[in-house]
Image (cartoon, rainbow, N blue to C red; front, side):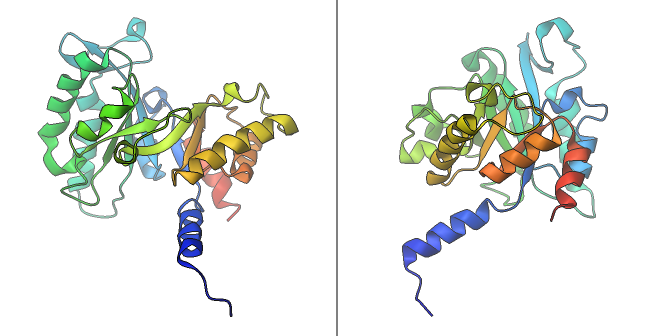
Length: 249
């Protein structure tokens, strides 16, 4: 039997780390059962858009539909903290907070809110903590390393991150429409597949999983993205998506 080189072993480990499909609960707060459905289906990541209104972090798609009772604390942080305290089966996941307002103004309020919960959201203190990932309006990529150890970031494919800042990047995300205008039925055009495959391979060379937002939310799309090597499926149909892939194990 041929002996594997150290490099080959690392490559195989990287491939295996992306082998299992992961589900991202897109705009989770718009679902009929925010947090609950995603948690019960063990979503890999749960996303909430956040606006800073006065000194409160409000979960909303736009400021027009704001509801001042729907704070990130009330909708996600406090319920998650309680779930982590409860006995029984628990799992660790990522909470993606998509910042819709100015980062420098929003960050102090966010830090104050997150740090109320101690180790619940801090993997440097508790290995099974819920990981906080920032998307949307982020700080300069060259400053990622300077933030508290509990804070991580959604990466972009067109940025050359330094080694230290890349450690704070959990995944690479991009808009599907940048690569294809395909509507979700039939086959993704071959020329579009080539463009998608290139960015997928680029992310994997960084040893990062990849997610496309804005992709058609259909079974055909889920499967074809999976076949191309996409690691995280972005969906509003959590239960349906999980059931689909479980049937194909």
